[in-house]
Length: 170
Image (cartoon, rainbow, N blue to C red):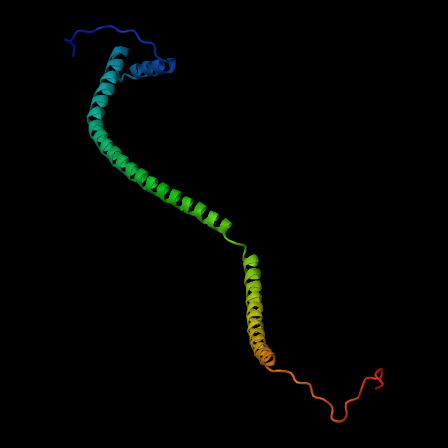
């Protein structure tokens, strides 16, 4: 590379890095500071280009993985929407059942009403039997009354002489 044109650059680097470059030159690892910096920049740029080439494959794999994850996320989102719809349906069913429960009679009151209903049924049966008995009795009495209306009543006179009333003397 000696025949290449060289361009000077100015850069500010940390003192510790500058001390490391000077130590490498003194140890004769590099001819001078320029050679050290040039070689470091070449390695960095070559590695970066190689990494970029390798990174393209990695990027493609990552893009594929991202797409797969997006599909999974979309499927999970759809599943969550379905689950949300199911929950809303369940919640509406709960509200409906709560309103049915609130409208339903109290079980204790219902039991008391059933008990009083059976007692009332028995009383009604007894009343109906009594009415039937009284109706039969009335029809029998009507028959007797009809008989006695049609019969002429005759008074029975005492045998013997007829007495005059005490105020009639003759």
